[in-house]
Length: 310
Image 1 (tube, one colour):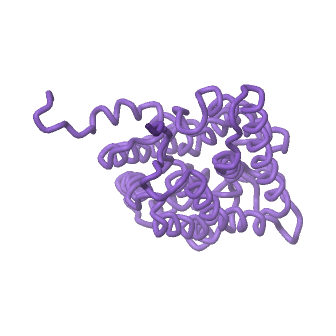
Image 2 (image 1 turned 180 degrees about the vertical axis):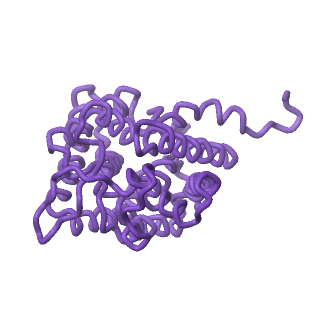
């Protein structure tokens, strides 16, 4: 009798593997990563390289110390490192980038049992920890000017919008020629990644759309201006979070209805934190909070078996 092997999703009958899915996510994030180097210079490249290498090395060493089989080939550590890097600005020292990746892989992922068992997104948890611990993580830096890295703090368009000042045009917000974290500024690059993931059937199109639409509608009601509401969508890390973090297989609901509830909750929390909280950006914290509520969302939205007890 053959042994029955139980593993984390995706399962073998789906035609996909974890490595294949993670490779698609890396490819989808490549436009944003490439644009970040163009806009912010070599400092963006070194941040990406540091986060990715630290994440992969941390996973390899953690599995080695714990006597587990190496899992770096599944590329999940690469995705975590790259996602964390895109959420950081060029003001962040490289040692902090490395520390963030180590925390994401060892504490958030490894200690909980590895891929498929973490209760929150590792990159988001690391980013929030860094935001609360290091002052360099908040805010952003200006794009590279005349080939020189600009490492000074910059008031991002989102900060201006929250203070009632629109410091960047819709065109600047769309193409990324403004201050912010290296992966959030260019909406065009993020949208290209979104299209790729939908075409490859890695994510459901309605998940990021539900998140973005909820936040957009909140700002329409609050400001009464379509332009301002659209500016709030394009500014900050909303698109980055909606496309690459709110679609995580492990830390989001498995049911379609649950995914919608999850994203609507993320959108509402993002609006509340941005508009009424002390932090100008609320995407990472919103997703982190909703990650913790996933078991309750799944229980409430689970389909009832025919004839079962309601």
